[in-house]
Image (tube, rainbow, N blue to C red; front, side):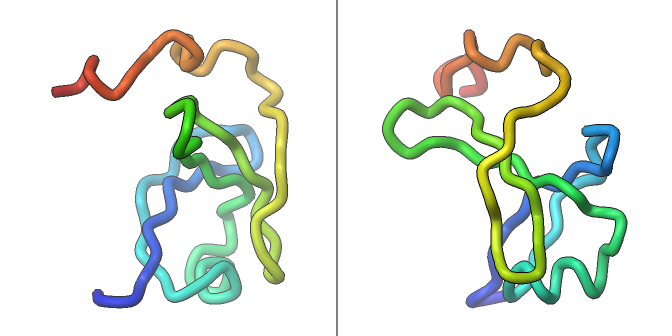
Length: 80
């Protein structure tokens, strides 16, 4: 698994599909074609950020659902 990226994946309705490990976005789409969005964390603010998945990379995306578990109010320390 060395050299693979971790993707927190969501379908077209922004429902979680799980976490997958792949070499890149092209491989992620080949193995999991129902993945449409990927969620990550901003390195500076630690806030969740969403990306639309395409074969040539990840692109900024604003989620349809506004709350998503009230993501703007959580911090890393909430989970340790």
